[in-house]
Image (tube, rainbow, N blue to C red):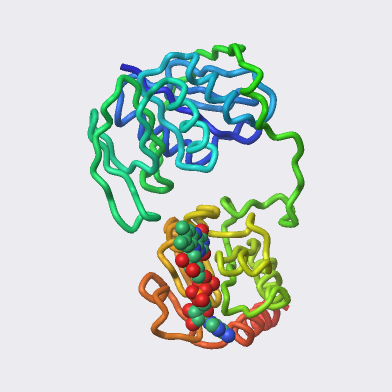
Amino acid sequence: MTALVFVEHVGGVVDELSLQALTFARGYDDDVEAVAFGGTPAVTGVGTLHVAEIDGYAPQAWARAIASLAPTTVVAAGTDRGNEVLAHAAAMTGGVFAANVVRADGDAVTRQRWGGSLLEEARLHGDVKLMTVAPHAVAIEEAAGEPAVQPFAPELEEADLVARVVERVDTSTGGLSLAEAPVVVSGGRGVGSAEGFASLEELAGMLGGVVGCSRAVTMAGWRPHTDQVGQTGTKISPDLYIPCGISGATQHMAGCKGAKKLLAINSDPEAPIMATADYAVIGDVLEIVPAITAELRRVRA
Ligand SMILES: Cc1cc2nc3c(=O)[nH]c(=O)nc-3n(C[C@H](O)[C@H](O)[C@H](O)COP(=O)(O)OP(=O)(O)OC[C@H]3O[C@@H](n4cnc5c(N)ncnc54)[C@H](O)[C@@H]3O)c2cc1C
């Protein structure tokens, strides 16, 4: 049996979560192939790399391309794209799809539910199995060996290209994405207003990071949804995560589990976020954050 891994990449550099999906697939099947879109990524440790000739992101078209390779097992990263494309591919192949899997052995899978707050044991009954791998559930193991690259032009239906990316708008983060930033300074309801984020922007800038936020903030219209961290936002894995005025709801924590260190700033010492914080400052975010920035400025002067 062969596992086909849908690999996401930017300019040929394979996404970290796709490297995790490749590692997962190698543990699941002896024979692993990959499929990519928009260029040829630097994938190693797979027999064949199929490169689909489709311009731009079009979930249904990408799924059609995957289905045309007649796979029996498809693996992807548990990203927005991984989940979207595999859901379409499952519908096209009549396969069974499990999202956010952490372990798999034959038909048996263990997957995250409820933003990772519980694990579900399930069985995949079907000739075609599709799985996305929960972000940061698998440690990357590099594998050597250049693949045979096989470009292909899948036969598409007109409807496959109805939903597609037609334009990209640059964010204000100067190219550093929330998902990949080494430091994320996030604000929650405790920040109090859109204007309150100015000091978080300044701190993030000084630490070479970006600003994130909780859903309470995007719901209030203080920040765009692209800044949201969590189950229905971006999954992040920075070296340092600084949630400011964020209570630590399970849906928020589902997005920042991958953080190496967590420094919580909150006025409530009993806030749930304290249970996972490595460091905490108890106090008013509007006083603490400017104080940290001022101290950084002083020691760097
Ligand atoms: C299906 C579903 C999906 C969801 N997805 C997400 C998601 O992706 N991301 C997400 O974040 N949420 C998500 N949520 C919402 C989540 O359940 C919480 O409601 C949300 O995370 C709360 O945001 P918050 O921590 O900013 O606000 P609150 O829970 O209101 O917490 C505010 C915190 O600020 C502290 N505080 C108040 N004033 C100050 C101050 N001056 N200084 C310092 N601290 C202060 C308080 O002590 C409190 O801990 C989802 C919910 C559902 C149902």
